[in-house]
Length: 93
Image 1 (cartoon, rainbow, N blue to C red):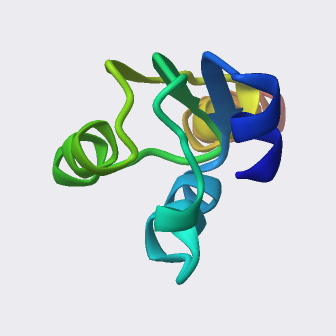
Image 2: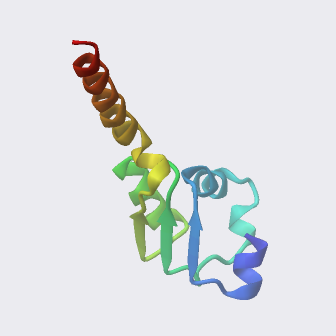
């Protein structure tokens, strides 16, 4: 929060826990975070109510979620394993 205030950061990128820690930090009101315009969250999904809370309380003008390989690993792994099992079944037949 000190870096945001001193550097007049306009964007904050981090995992949801970063945003939660800012919202729940006892000294949050001591810092000027009004330079923030944009927040980008990754690593795990955020509930829409939490996104709105961040927009309202930090405040940022716009929050977005980004999804990379970590967030989609369950889907990719699921299909890979299913495919592997199909190949094994065909080879053993």
